Length: 267
Image (cartoon, rainbow, N blue to C red; front, side, top):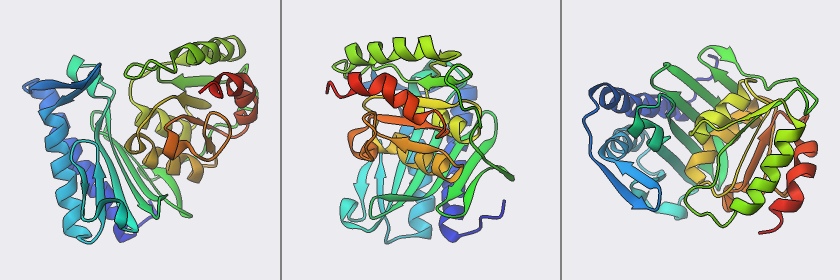
C-alpha cells in the first residue's frame, strides 16, 4: 500500500488492536451481553475493543477528539476540528450469535468531512484503508467499484430497520422495487463491511435507514476513493447527519434513487 500518513498508520494500528480483542473473544465465546435499547445490544467486548483503539489514537494524536459508539465524546468532542469516529464492533448481534460477519470501523474527520478510513475484518484478516485524495486499498490492492451499469445485473446490500421501526413501511416499498429491478438483495448485518464491499466491487449498491455516524464515516470515504457515490436516500449530501444512506458504484445511483426516492421522502 502506498498510503503512509501518520493518521492512516494510527487508524490501521487502532483497528488491529480492536480486532485482536474481538478475535480472542470470538474464539473463547466468554463475554457478558446487555441491551442498550430495543434490539440494540452491547457486550463487554465492544467496550474493550473501543478502549484498545482509543489508547492507540490518544497516544498518536492526543489533541484530537474521539467519538466512539460505546464511550461517547472525549478531548473536546465536537469542538475539535479533527475527530476520530469509531465503531469498535460493527455487527454486534452477529458477533453475539457467532455469525462470522463483523468488523472494526475507524474514521478520521476534519471539520465533519471524512479524511482517513480503516475497516478491519478480524476473522478474514482483511484491512480496508483509505485517505482522501490518495485512494482506497484492501491490503496492497487498490480498490475500485464495480463497472456494472444496469440494475438488472446489480446486487444490492441492505440493512433492515430493527431499532427504530418508523421507517419500516417506506423501507419495504423501496425493497420491493429494488428486488424487482436487480439480481438480488443481501442483508449481511454489518454496515461497515457492506460499505467496504461496495468499494471493493463485490456489490453495486447499499442502502439503509437510521445509521449512526460511526457506522458510515470510514466506509463513505472508501467508496468515494474507489470511484463510487454516496448520498442520502433523497439524493442530497446529508447522509452523515440523517443516517439514511445510499451508496453505489455511481453508475446505478440515479436509477436507485428513482426507485426509492419517493418512498424515502415520506420521512
